[in-house]
Amino acid sequence: MRQAAAQYQRTSAASLAGRPTECAAFNMVIRDLAACSPGPTRVAALGRNHTLWSVLVKDLSVADNALPEGLKANLMRLGFWSMRYSTLAMLRDLSVQPLIDVNRDVLEGLLAQQTAPASAGAPRGTPNLPI
Image (cartoon, rainbow, N blue to C red; front, side, top):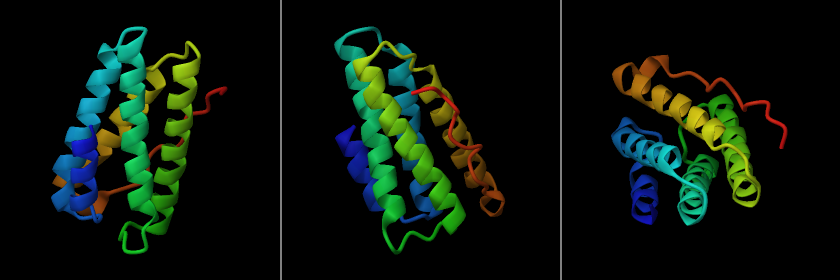
């Protein structure tokens, strides 16, 4: 995951050139979360999800990120929620399904952006979950 995160940082810069890398990272994390079982594999999958969102939030916060301010703010809120939920899910028996759902929504947005860059929109928002 660290290699994927490093590659994401090098290629993102809010350009379409980074989208395949972002899609691959989300696919990997979704797969890992869906396949995890209680114990070390669950903690590892949740850690990778946390790392992915940490890298994304860091990239969104740099001055030269060209995404619209509203989209950046929405994605950052989603990222902070995802990192917090990942941490809580490591400590409690919380379902990983909300993380999978959010990651799939973001992945769908990235894939749509690849085919129609001008139609990029904001994510649906942070799920209203009691945590």
